[in-house]
Amino acid sequence: PIPKAGDLLALAVATARAAADLVRERAAGVVEVADTKSTATDVVTQADRDTEALIRRLISEQRPEDAFFGEEGEETGGTSGVRWIVDPIDGTVNFLYGLPRYAVSIAAEYAGEVVAGAVVDVAAGTLYAAFRQPDGSAAAVRDGEPVMVRPPAELSQRLIATGFSYDAGLRRVQAEALVRFLPVVRDVRRIGSAALDICGVAEGTLDGYLEEGLHLWDHAAACLVAEAAGARWEATTGAGGRRFVVVAPAHGYDELREAAVQAGFLPVDSVPGV
Ligand code: IPD
Image (cartoon, rainbow, N blue to C red; front, side):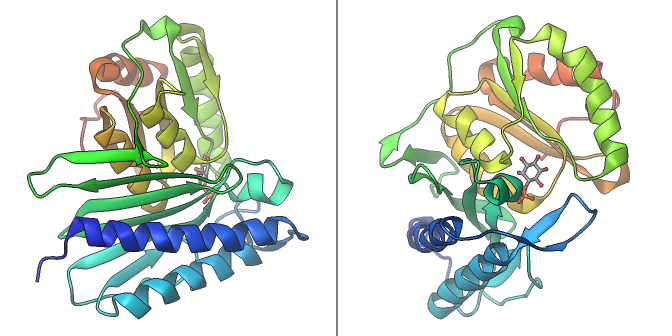
């Protein structure tokens, strides 16, 4: 049977809340690096691992036939057509340092499309949630209240968030692009959690977000929230198979994308895609 997006969302929300409780509990104790991943700056803590294990258990207890794709564990297949895409702690470096900007992100995909997403800002306790209706439209809420993107603004008046890769070579490219991009916008923020940045676009605390080198688990849930709040987004695969993600209110999207191309954040010949 085709699962109801509302049911998937209810499970995503309950699970994200339980996971956020665990992350909050761990944040109150001693947080240490357990291991490094792609590079020495790409760290994982025991809390990342334990939280992902909790999420996997809570979801599989309810829906054992689903596939699961998380940042910290083995990807597992399923037979239901539903795949869960999970980042147990998005903003691990902030979590490590006690900077209160990190999130639990859980998305449910059906037939290759994200249909439900929950993001919990752990320190603030805020829940962002969205699901796709059967007609393709989507609705988003923050703590139960509808959210909406900011009204249109000139490029020079826009506050844009970005992030930096854990790869030193890509960081150099990002730093060079920033040299060209920073003078044409109001300012740039590097907050440290892609999921919260994208939810920031959804709620209108940011005018846009862009970053190269993201993973699906960083943005899957938050992009549905942003889309439902009036944003447009793309996750284009660029050089070396890296994902380049742009999220902005639909009315100012093309202008931001063009500025990002001109600055060198993404290749001149790249085409908007998902
Ligand atoms: C990271 C954060 C960060 C972004 C990185 C991501 P993680 O996720 O979202 O803001 O700049 O690209 O990898 O590693 O903390 O889950």
